[in-house]
Length: 154
Length: 98
Image 1 (cartoon, helix red, strand yellow):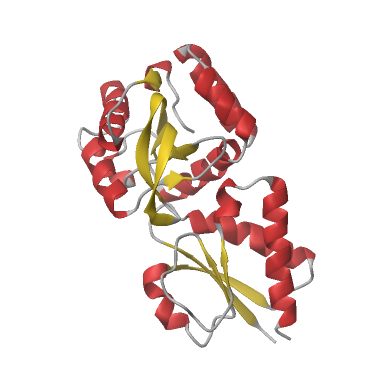
Image 2 (cartoon, rainbow over the protein chains, first blue to last red):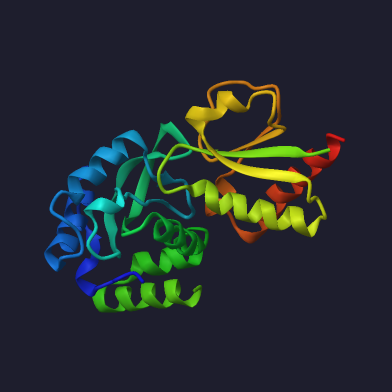
């Protein structure tokens, strides 16, 4: 069961690079008590070794995450970006992608990780849904929408 | 004859799990029960040379192998149609081996 709190939504967020976005998102989770303080750094380190950029349409997205150890409560934080931020393509690390939505995953158990990704993949593969999310400017609505989308598939 | 499809990914979140499931379901639908689908780490792929009949890769492969390779990304981010096209291709390759 993923906690998706309005405070985890960073909408029309301005960030200079992938690290900054990951930091900003993990800060939200940390303040809530969903992850340990180290989660941000761990996620950045992991992103460097195993990039999570995906060449989705109409724009690329990324799903950074770290190991279950740093997670107190399974949760999802999302940033929609006012200007694209560069992430490397998971399927081709030589390729840089201009990412417009970042989904920071935090899962308590490896099995949950796969489940969450399976549910998120239904959003990733849907152009309309990505556009819809990108256009939201209410944190409350964004959190509600995500909860609805992700719970529907359970 | 028993065939082996390996689904290779880098690490961690196991994006290959999603691919494996879809491939398995289609193989069952097609009655191809003697085909095994196995998730592996790209780092371990050498151990499967000689055994594997098809590679489904969730990441870029920088090397050539003697067996067909397909990109597994549509299983993660493709439309329903793109997934079906990929599954069709996998079934076609497997059937062509006999």
